Length: 396
Image (tube, rainbow, N blue to C red; front, side):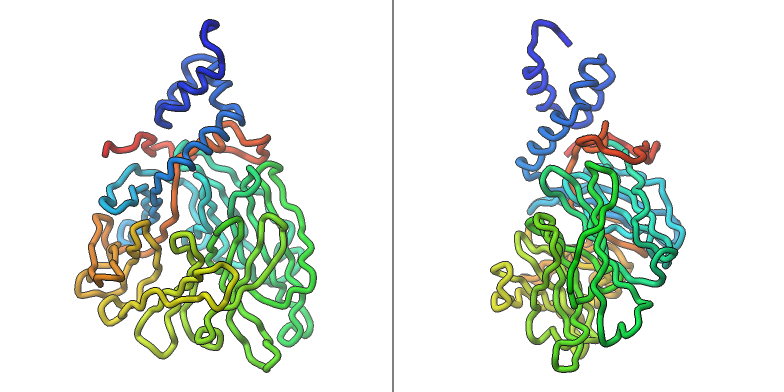
């Protein structure tokens, strides 16, 4: 680094480069490497990326015939869905495929938990092909017996955090007297798990329920095993990363007792949403909580006619309000490809992706340097991942 240029000036210059060029600068000289891999530079780069609000989507597709998973990043705006980059993730599952728990500020959390007793988790940064294998949680089948659990992933107080809520099954009187869940929290800054006191919390999260992270709070779909009327009722369970406390949100009244329905929580724009396929209707309702925490503010935003788009495996909301899905059958798309559905016009647009998709998942994605040389003293095993992957984004 030149003695005639102040370090903060070099920081400003390097910060303006594209990520691929920043990575190339790490091999120019030792001083640039030290600067770029410093926690301050990584954090500043992340904050600037967040401020730009350039939303992209990371798509995972598993094509059954090829027996291979495909990871690609796409621009997500009103005009285009162009592919931005391709990635390889070389870890595989012991039991089918790795479950994507969620993504936050450039990191993606995977969990290999399809089979009881297997609890391997990975944090992956596609942009720099680095990953962390997380240490084993403190609650396991060997230590506590059979259980079901849910994972949540988010970013708070300049740290990446993973919450794990465990409900033990081999407990006397479990069906009528639900024991408090066991809660543990992993923080990337410490590289370890710690137990959280849950207290007398009566609600249960569905096994491996998908998460919705919004405003520092993780949400899952769950239920109240005894709502004082002798019935099981649905609700949303939450975990606040700020005060590390469990909570609950009520769902619309028509949803609470619909036990045979398909349901999941999601983020719609800047609001919490609920995707609900009623048990006795051939439709899917998109509910949005207009005022967070206010049960009366639930509004049925859209109803999808499943005679037009047969029940999709997953729904994901785009920035322009369209819904990404892989319908199991549609007159517009019969080959199992990814489509974008406009709930206002009812139009379906087939996207240029792989056909006959077996496993499909979408998360929001942004470029970051996190895990390049650790963040705030990250512990754990950091590895190169996907040696054949392309780090260079495609030109727009």
